[in-house]
Image (cartoon, rainbow, N blue to C red; front, side):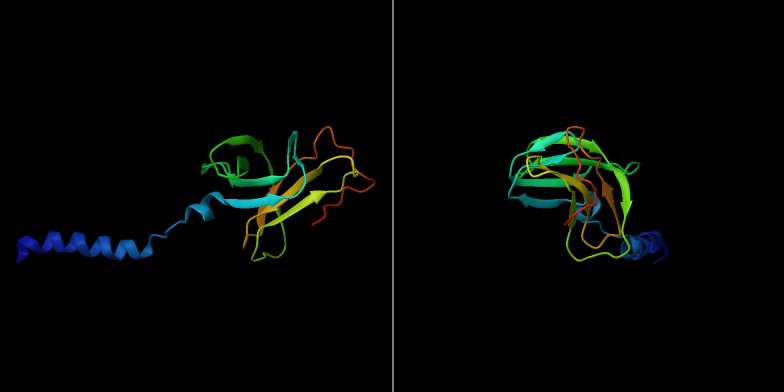
Length: 140
């Protein structure tokens, strides 16, 4: 009986420990967000045509502001951007993108991205080629 005590103790501690270890879903860790846009748009200095894209954070525990943009299938990395941390007062149940106001002849410029349920997100710089309107207030 006492010979099996270490085995039972190890089994019990692994079961109890497993209850307290949080499980992470890949989408929650990398904030993977599928988007479909109906017109071309710019993310910093990359202009993308209308279509389906995947935004996600780089798999890094030290820097949570590096954003990767993939094609709709998630197989081809299009660009990697070092974004600026951003915050909002209330979280929403859906991902939230906002765009800078730009003249009609220029592509819409992505301003912020918030993952569903988060109050922290990322902000993108206005593209160098973009000419902002009188106010560069983000729009939905």
